[in-house]
Image (cartoon, rainbow, N blue to C red; front, side, top):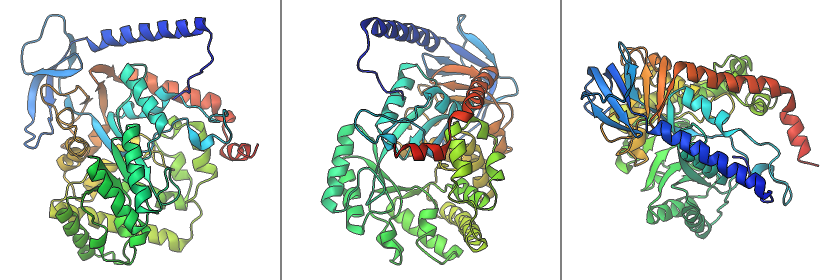
Length: 474
């Protein structure tokens, strides 16, 4: 988000307030538009998931008003003939760019780089990702969420998790007492979830999770390295609700057999712990280790901010790995496929997440890659879709509001040209997206993406990752 300027002239303040009022009026007018999608095939993604063919969906005041009922005269008609309607997608593991504290090096300086919130959110919306779970949330993300809620920015709903770790995080908790205090502070700051991180010691890890339970905050995250070499049952702590990567399991063992995957699945089932497989992450890492061309060939790379383009290409921590390390990455990826199979077999819920924002993982675009990899790993097309719709909403405890197509739920929807139950890659064939009841058709999506690409190209020379790091010394 752009930082507020505290010392403004009254005339400037008045101008901004008027602009916001006009923007709010315009957005309210859009929200009040009634839409009718006619002759569409609906994939509701409820547990029964009975496809409703050739029906009419009425959207009114940002919610699904009716299914297969009469159309009011004032409705804006959208032709859904031979098209397929699914719920908006949920990426359960993202890291969204935002201005912020990493670049503050003395009081009053502020960040060295500011981002355009709309440009950050456009790749999500263009790909039908209407809800995201940010697992590295900071204060600035609250500001971004506020911009979206106000209607100043078209973006996804944002769930925010506060990271607590033993080092390399903010805050750092080195004792159980520190951990409990960190959870309480996060609750007071308005975070909804806690993310436990890699460097917590065993007792602090358990204390953070226990305190989160007391504060009614669900826990997602990493399995600390402190558990390496110990029985797997030790880190399946009650109320540890969601593992952020399959990699968290593979780094705990040198046994990459299906039997080991089944052991993890049994323990997760018994503990009520869900999984984000995050297959995209490890596959991307192994590809980058071999060649940076894999990044330049990414479909969404041109929509990545120039600073991140520079970082991914000039300061890539994976590129140049030894053959032995690449072989290790490949072993991990193959084991992660076994983990998906074992968790499916055991009936452990899995939700789709991508780690979008780390090197080589592009916001929005990567979720379609993840769905394809999940299907290749043994999920049906329907199961993969459930992982990115109903199940994500269920874990976030907003399943009464979104994740399925039912009357009364928010109108976060994707209109597809072809059936994703036939081929999961059809989730990419987007005709338009409803974002909180606002209709964005294909032409508008293309314009939004083009705006991002043009700005990136025009400003590419202004951003160099290494120059930025050097500027921190000044």
